[in-house]
Image (tube, rainbow, N blue to C red; front, top):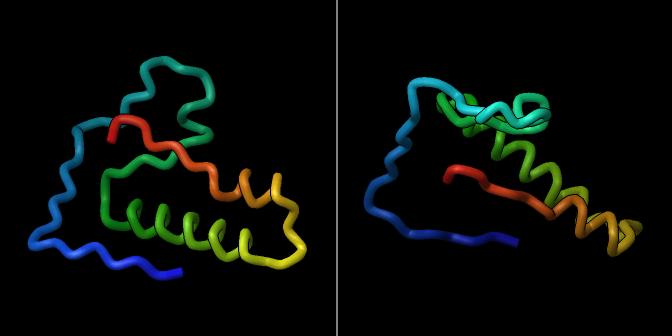
Length: 74
């Protein structure tokens, strides 16, 4: 599956510091976006999940798990 989103300009605005708000597990189970390399890592993780979800032997529950993603603070 391929999707194109046209745009004139892309702005990546980053904060000075990653905020976890003292929530346990955030740092260990999150992807922070501060640098271009962080965006590349996130893209790779998403593409890996999408590719794995297309394997024909995946159960519906596993596909749902692989494609479940949450954006916080975006």
